[in-house]
Amino acid sequence: MTHLTLDGVTKRYSDVIAVDDMNLDIEDGEFVSLIGPSGCGKSTTLETISGLTKPSDGTIRIAGEDVTDEPPKDRDIAMVFQNIALFPHMTVRENMTFGLRLKNYDQGEIDERVERAAEILQIEGMLDRMPDELSGGQRQRVAIGRAIVMDPEVFLMDEPLANLDAKLRVHMRTELQRLQQELDVTTVYVTHDQAEAMTMSDRIAIINDGELQQFAPPLECYNRPANLFVAGFVGSPSMRFVQGRVEDGQFVDPDLGVAVDVSPSTMEGPGDVTLGIRPEDVHLADHHSVSTATEPTTLEIDVVQPMGDELVVYLRPEDADTAFDSDIDDEEAVSKTDQLLMTVDPGHDLEADQTVEVVLDRSQIHLFDSASGEAITHGLEQQAEPLSR
Image (tube, rainbow, N blue to C red; front, top):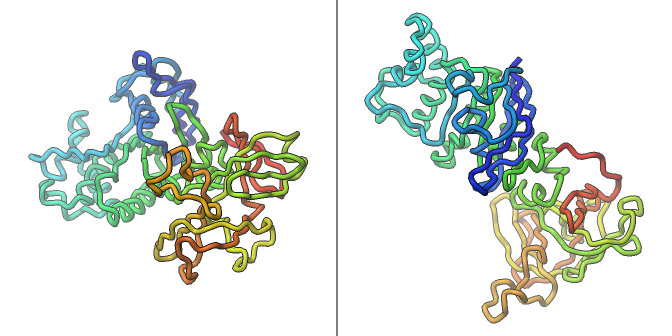
């Protein structure tokens, strides 16, 4: 059983903390993605697991064995990088067998492993080709095959699909998901692409400024974000936030004019809170079937973005100056937290500057403490449960 455990792993570079007290317990055969903004520490975390970077503090265990001070060659891992880095003077077969030949494996076992990997990756007819005779997707398969033949305890992948075009990336995402399920190997996958993380992973670890924000299944992070950062980072278009205050059992904001009744059990008393709502949970007041809708709020359409299967509609307060008006100061401009987003069926005839009435789905409203950013509740019809962190 190949458990991978990071216990209090920290990495410092002079006065910069790249990874701060990282704790992850990854199950045998689990596919875990590390996601977060650029520079958040996800690649550094992967490098500490691989042994390419030694942590300043903490312990790394693979299959229960402390490997914190072990070199990469003794960790029984295989890495696939963003840069495919095949040897240009070697055939596909030679590239795939390079690591095995360095470890003096028997030729019969080498051939058996290569044939098996080639069959899994459907590159059997390419083993005698040179890398420059392959497409981008085929070269990436060879790089993955080079890792498969090592039969590792853990796969580590650092944005392996980032250099592929969009269509090929979607195809290879499916291939990787199928491959991981077939091999049942513990996999840690670094990506900046939310779609990859959400569709491929058993759990995702969301990192910001070197700190773990939430470690949970993708849909739990989407539906029950632990804090404002997770709520705003996961999802596209992202959740929108409205700053306001709860007083006398009602949330009121001074900008949009959204008013929502809040159960007394949700908060102990009055306080500054941030209301979060995803675009799919904002509806036109005269075209909805939501049984838990709020009272209608009158807003004005700022921008309409046709996306094919839906319209993404930016909403602002009535008669507000837009953020794109060059005659107003930045402080006066409508900020992102002063706008709601709404997604609607493309059959609706909507245009900029049109006034509309919208309602929010109370069961999908999130409240966060404005000071700490921590979640207070998810859905105003029920009490929040403890969050996975």
